[in-house]
Image 1 (tube, helix red, strand yellow):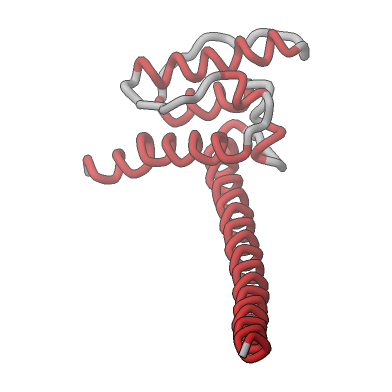
Image 2 (cartoon, one colour):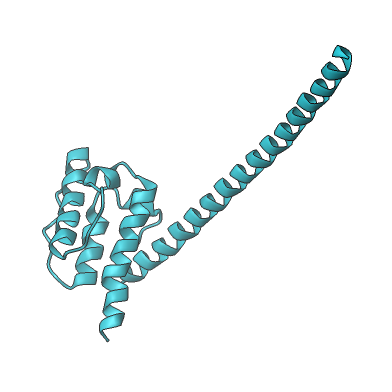
Length: 154
């Protein structure tokens, strides 16, 4: 009788382990697929937003090649906001040191704040550090404020 119970329990435990292994590999596949789709979406957004930024910077014969790195010093961001708003923004600080980049990005974010553009949990350090998700979010917010709103007012 003890042998029957052990065999039955052993089979049940082995069956549960087999199910767990299948579920575990299925979960792993699902997670990797979700990650791949998220990466693909981010790549498409980066490409799309880079083209959008370049379409506006072309007015002053400027261009960016990489959204994350070319906005880090804040100069192109200031130029973009000046083009979109039609207003004169503060001159960018010269220099390549981190403090100069932070100051330029801060000027951009301050202008957006004055325009009542709400930026949740974003600082100039996020742009300077090349935070991809927040940089995409910033550009999307700028698109909503200056592009979509301009069309809705027409």
